[in-house]
Image 1 (tube, rainbow, N blue to C red):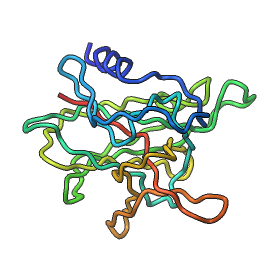
Image 2 (image 1 turned 90 degrees about the horizontal axis):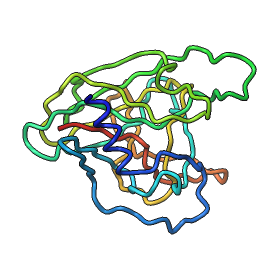
Image 3 (image 1 turned 180 degrees about the vertical axis):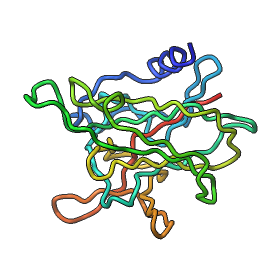
Image 4 (image 1 turned 120 degrees about the vertical axis):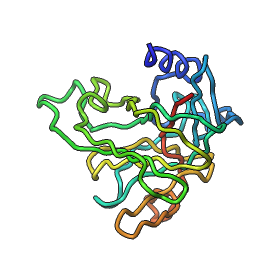
Length: 207
């Protein structure tokens, strides 16, 4: 029932169809950082534009020890994180002749001081393997009470590519280096060896 409520909330908030490179750069931008349905609140740090209109690219992490990370703020005291929503791909689709290979990934929840609150790891099959090649996965998290700022890190280990919105950067996306425990601006490199800030397509839901 909880998952059904979450999916309903998400569908009410945005259309789940993917046109990876949107033609219209003037797609309407939402100004709210939250979307609610019932008691579920979805937090985001992307522009809020309909996903079918977003200018998206799919990006792997630069190193095995780095994570694409998004910063969030709990909407109220006592708020509990329940789900992490991630748009990504393992590169497989139904046109491929071979079966998909098993690929590991991990998700970490960190507090404002970057201390680990929860670590989740699994193979990608039920989350990011899809006939269309792209999927929004919902990773269920044991209820974690959150106060203030927190971070969600996605480790694709250079194999699973995370969706990155190439326009309308909100400044809430980072790269986290697990070795040095440092955060760096979330950027991608262009063909001209320039970097542009992006929004990682990671959202969270809770109540």
